[in-house]
Structures are given as C-alpha cells and as structure tokens.
Image (cartoon, rainbow, N blue to C red; front, side):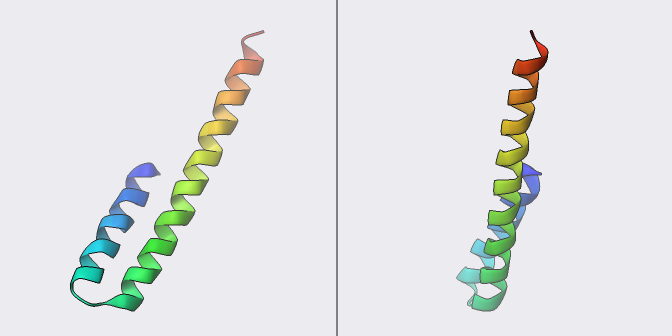
Length: 54
C-alpha cells in the first residue's frame, strides 16, 4: 500500500511539472489517503503483535 502512495505522489509531481493542476491535486489526495491507511494498519498490526506476545 505504501508503494501505491509513492506512485501516486510521483504521478502528482509529474502532473504538476507539466501544468495539470487538477490531476496533480487528485493524485495528491489519493496518495495522502493511502499513506494514512498504511500508517493506521501498521500501528494496528504493531499493537496486536505486542498483545499476542504475552
């Protein structure tokens, strides 16, 4: 999932360089959502692994 966030970020940067503001904004929004979902899943997995070690 983090890979897709980085891909959308790169797409946004390339679109911004070529002047496609709408596409860049959409790609940045998708990248942000994917990044925060990745962080949430990583934290949940970490907490569950700490609980299961007991």
